[in-house]
Image (cartoon, rainbow, N blue to C red):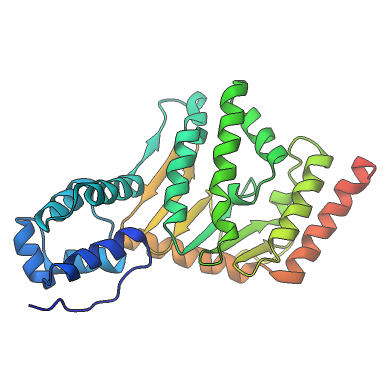
Length: 286
């Protein structure tokens, strides 16, 4: 029976699942019956639309039932595992675990698989927008392991590569107070702000700044990243939580909308950056 066409998500996992069913010439109901107990047409539809991330176990069983080649099945399981991964350290002293090269690579795969990434952080500039000196200063507050710091910086730079690909879109909102946190030195901050202004001119990157004194219609307590409409990663003191429940994701989408309404973009955002950069420039003697 021909597969019924539903809206397909933009991410690799959703697209691949939809293609597998299409190639098998199965309806959603037929594919669910083939996969066995616990599968339904509505669940498969939500996977393919990107509204629900399957568990690694479910996607592995489903792909096997559809006769998917092993390499493709393993790739789907990896994508699902990355999305569901939850990183919690046993104690605050182990916060750096979420900043390791392995974690950076895992988040990088999620970012590369996303069409749109939306980010807010109340304390630091988002990692995708950080300069090398700013990264190093941040990581030095977490560990004195020089090898770990340098390898993590390399991994974070690799994460930044999708910024150069216009098929990926990014929306980053930063509070002016975040830019006023002097990380390391005025010289480091001046370089960071100049880099931020440069990045904000890219056609696929929107950088918004919430100005000093802007009425607060939202008060987020933690930083977060939204990947399309399928995953939210929320920064926590002891690690990072990966959220895939559609109801929770909708709440973060609304929160991001409120933050965007509070922010200014384009030339107005660069004017806010310039005002703060002038302060650092005076302090650095530049």
